[in-house]
Structures are given as C-alpha cells and as structure tokens.
Amino acid sequence: MSDTTGADSGSLSVLSAGAAALARAADLDTALAVIVEAGAAAVDAGLAAVFAQDPEHGGIELLLTLGMGEEGVPAFAAEVAGNPQHPINIAALDRSGTLGRSVTGPDGGSWTGVDLPLVVGAGSGVEDCVGVLTLGWPGAHEVSTAEETLLVGIADLAASAIALFRLSSMISERAEWYERVSHTDALTGLANARTVRRVLELEVARAQRQGSDVSVAVFDVDDFKRLNADAGSRAGDLVLRQVASILAESVRLVDTIGRVGADEFVLVAPGSAGVTVAKRVMDGVSKLDPVEGYLVTVSAGVARFPQDGTDPETLLAAARGALASAAHPASIGETQSPSS
Image (cartoon, rainbow, N blue to C red; front, side):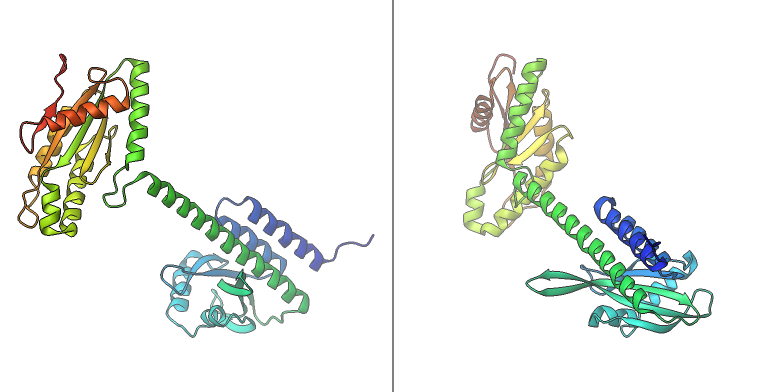
C-alpha cells in the first residue's frame, strides 16, 4: 500500500478535526478554533480569520483570528467594518470568494489572501451566507487545485459550525422562552395561576412533612371593575402592572407571588410571615400615584397552614374568606381561627 501524500494527510487532518469539533465542541469559538487551526496548518497559511453575519445588527463581525497578534486585531476588524466595499464584505454579500488578492500582513509586508463565503442550505433549495473565511500567505502564493478543494472543505466545516451552534442557541433560547411563558402571566410577568397552584401544593406537602407553617395571602385591587369601566382597559392594565411591581419588590426570595384572576394576586409564603409581607405590599401600593383620578389601593386576606386549612383548596378558600371580611378597602383580613 502506498504512503499517504501530504495533501491527503492534510485533508484527513482537517476532516478529523472538523468532525470532532462539530460533534463535541462545547461552544462556537472552540469549534471554529479547532477547524481553522487545522485548516490553516493543512495549507500552510500564516494568517486566518473568520467573520460571521451578525443576526441582530446586520453586517459581519470578527469571531476569530490566527497569526495576527492581539495588537493588530482591532485595526483589522475596524478596517473591514468601516468599508462596505472591502473584499471580505463583498464576499459575504455576493457569496463569491477571491483566491489571490494582495493584502498587507501584520508585519507590514505583502501577503496573498483568499476570501471564502461560508454558505449553508436554508431549506427549499435556498442558500444562506453566514460569514466569510479568510486566509493569508506571506509573499506571492498561487492556490493550487488541490488547495482550492481543501479550502472549500474548510469553509464548509466552518459554515456548518456557525449554523449548528446558532441553531442550538436559538432552540435553547426558544425552549427557555416557552418554559418562562408557560409559568408566567403575560401582562404582569408574575407567576400564573397554574404555577401558583403547583407551588402551593409543594409547600403544603413540605410543611406537612416538616411540621412547619405556610402563609397564603390573597390580594384584590379595590374598585378595579369601576376603574376599568370608567377609565378603560389600558388604565386597568397599568394599575395591574404597578401593583404587580410592588408585589414583586415586597416579597422574600423564598416566596411566590402570582396573578390568578383579573385583579386577584396570591402570595405563597413559607412560614408565618404572610401578614408581615401583606403589610409591606399595602405600604408600597399606598405610595402609587393615582391613575385617571383613581387612588390605587388593594385589600388582602391571609390564611395559614395548618391552622386555617390542611390542603391548597381549603387554604385558598380561607384566605379569600378573610379578604371578603376585611373591615374596609386597603385593609388586611385575617381568619378567625384561635391561633390567628
């Protein structure tokens, strides 16, 4: 069997490094570094850089450089960013590379550069340019057919890495968004009714095991229906967001606060601090400016486990009963159990 040629050896090195980077690299920077370092070594390039499309702000951004030195990188990035007609920008825009342009190297001498667009399929036969790979050699350098084939392979690996890691990031962000939305109220950003119910179930179960207390407080915006009818839903939404903000600022880290009805909020507070937290909420709401001439106030009802109930339904019913029996608006109603 004949020995592997230098070109074949370089191709295998790039293939091996690229496969490993795509399969196991922890992040995009690491994957690109592995691919580009192997690629530059395989074609004996002294310089390399990767630019990627910036999906948020448009244009391209410098992600990686090899062989430039830290002092030269900012100037290089600024040179490309400040010139829409720079060959690297043109390569990204036209998706057509250059295989032999004269460039000034970091040593101030003449170098030969190549610019290769990083192109991936975007479905239905459409292709998308996600960036540009540029490499350089000192002095004059003629890119051979074998080198061109290898360079295209390196560019494809770099393009795949960018597309793969950005897709992974997008999927992760979307999953986090769905997770957050499934647990939060869209208007106020607080926990939604389902989340509050689940937290209350868990806290009651924990308190039963440990023989501890749980407080449940129900808050209701006073005269909310009249405000909505007279001033409109926009004013009502503003009040709800303001009250939600006060609630979020007033509770402890161990507490859970959520919106469970049109103008009803529920606090689940481990321990017996429900009344204390409710008073902080009332004080905070009392400092809000009037909305459309209406003074913003809330009333509250507080119940405790196990004195006022031993399951979530009973505790919520007790807290709502205490709210209904509040002496007047902007007051706190408490259950009448012997230990209250």
